[in-house]
Figure 1 (cartoon, rainbow, N blue to C red):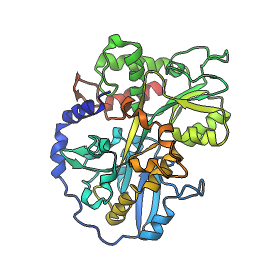
Figure 2 (cartoon, rainbow, N blue to C red):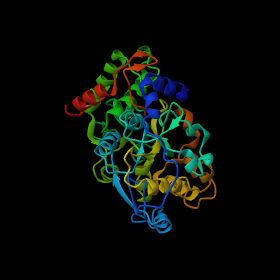
Figure 3 (cartoon, rainbow, N blue to C red):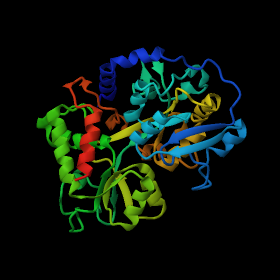
Amino acid sequence: MTFFKTAVSSLAALATLASLAMAQEAKKEMGAGEGEVDIVAWPGYIERGESDKNYDWVTGFEKETGCKVNVKTAATSDEMVTLMNQGGFDLVTASGDASLRLVAGKKVQPINISLIKDWGTLDDRLKDAPWHTVDGVHYGVPYQWGPNVLAYNTKVFKDAPKSWAVVFQEQTLPDGKSNKGRVQAYDGPIYIADAALFLMKTKPELGIKNPYELNQQQFDAAIELLKAQRQLVGRYWHDANVQVDDFKNEGVVASSSWPFQVNLLEADKQPVASTIPDEGATGWADTTMMHASAPHPNCAYMWLNHSLQPKLQGDLAAWFGSVPTVPAACKGNALLTDTGCATNGSENFDKIWFWRTPTSKCEAGGCVPYSQWDKAYREVMSQ
């Protein structure tokens, strides 16, 4: 997949963003900490040992810097955008379907990478990634990345499912029962891209080249698939912990998921595993971005520096099931182990269609913008 090519073309379609690079200057130097830092984060991204004492990358930071870490978890990118629009936060761990919206809305500020002492240790593929870089200006520090996996019950599926069809099309599963009412889908408009990715491989006549760049015909086909899926879905998930409970207690046997939930279920000795089906997968490359009016900018920069420490990167990857943005973290971490990055999909980078915000102007010509994705998906879920 030439994901950078498509990413750059999408960025070119947002040409008006280029002028924003000069809208606010990056911080020139760091000063004394303000005593706290407020972060909007995905569940499991900021741990202080409360869930498991082995996973704590907050306590040491607080002692070293005097910056108390306050965390507001968000279950979807739309929720993150809403919270950042409201203000009062310093940082957000934004995925690609939120990051450029925040830049366009002037809600995040440029990052002075000369103040990020370990910037050079980042994966070269992520340093200038177009979901956080506009006109050569960086608006964030890469944090973690990974795929949206197909989680499945190993008692129902003796072999890993080879296709996303098990959640998109009504069928009899290997245990002889229908999948109706036993599968889930993600509660977020960006999930339309998952349907488009499935159609890209199963209905090539639609001509889909990029699941985030859909003309009206392609978009309509994806929505029709999702309307049919609505009859199968027992619950649309957005709370990771609720999905864990659904796999344990509510009879869910297959769903799109994050490695985070799969790790929790496996640690609890539940019969759950995950796979990336033959059609490939969408995914996320998350960036820690700083609010344009961050109330604690010095503590925020201290956290940005802390976020690239190899131990934090490795511990987080082990906990969440993600891949570090600092390759050195893949070796020598007791929790992740030297095989952990490969287990979490480090070799799948070029197979993942990373989340992007759909725009009306794109390489394919006229495309359906995110506002229509949002409206259409809400209608699907409300059926």
